Length: 511
Image 1 (spheres, rainbow, N blue to C red):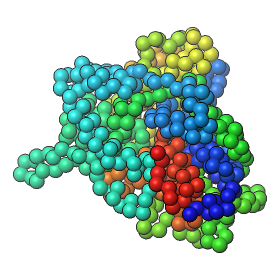
Image 2 (cartoon, one colour):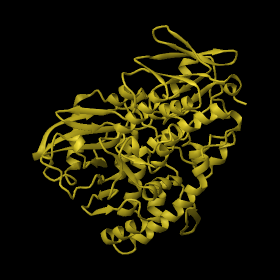
Image 3 (cartoon, helix red, strand yellow):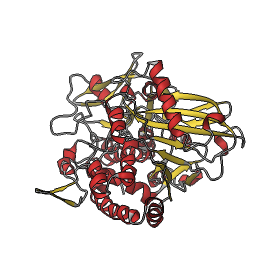
Image 4 (cartoon, rainbow, N blue to C red):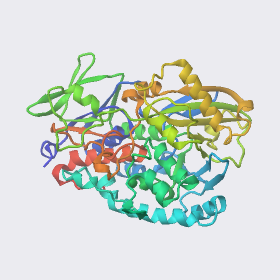
């Protein structure tokens, strides 16, 4: 039985005010605990940042929400109010427009498998839709096999079972060789989708999540399945509004926030977490500590304590990829026919992957262009706010303080976006750039790395550490903990941590 079940109200310290941490804080406060959040920066929201200038408003983090049911559940469970009572989520339709390297375009409708298949047939030729639809059937099987253990349940001690590949890849007959099955998403794209534009479509989903298609397991097929099944959603006023709503929900449930508070040590007493020590020397006692920041920092706070033994999933040793973002203020109104989200594909996806996961390169990147139809993010109807994003290597392997490199990448993204935004350069008033260094400063993530969702297969190499640690009373939440990165996944981590603290050994996962 959990300690707080015996003692009643527990004192809980939460490190960081990211989305997973705040989701945990709100749920724990509703359960009757006294929760205080210590955030090293001056604001809440973690990666869900905002930049404002001259009446233009930009999201500097995630631009869309998948699986909105996660946050609907949060608001119902913490106040019996629908999500729609605090923000205005709107489905994005079309969900995405793709512009391939040869100029071919296709717009995919939101949450409509039949519509997607029809659009692919029209743009890529008869049979493309059927081939994609058959792939989604296999992707659904991988989703059904992994949904509970990867998203809705704690990472159980027998997590090794998730090392097996759940995607039912087709057997490929090889001349004079034994039949093979695709082990990576790149092989699925080449062998099952025939490469080309359909393969590039699949690989772009991995790259957007910070995954290399050549190494990501075949189970990454669940990423396009999730988007095309549950849809893509935008929050009016920008995605930062979702962070504001969660923060205000925490305040309404008497969660306390202390900003500008840098936690330097986790204190231990009698073999369990007993509080934290701040950079100014202040000591805060607690019955439980929840770390919503990169858990690699925990090991530096507890040097003599082994938090992840050989029988546990450890935090990644190497830095993962980051994001490079260019914010564009444009004169001229947004055309009514413009897609909210356009993916402009790189001419050489393999070379781009080497750039994104190894260092700076010369190939034009795949760029995601966001053009929200939202009066709240522009000064008036005669202007438009546009955001360009590409996956890049983190700061460390690449020196993102190099001004010439930053200028080159800025130019690369603007040039790549021109097919998606006609007359872009003529309309450009000004631009702002956000590099991995800026992301590291805003989120505290080493090198500005952005965590990917947890995935099964590949020998469990794509799992994130459990929400519990080897130190009783110390928990992890947010994108760097199970079930991994992404807004929805972060919200799920908060639900899991709250369940583990409130119900202890009786907790069997979110319902």
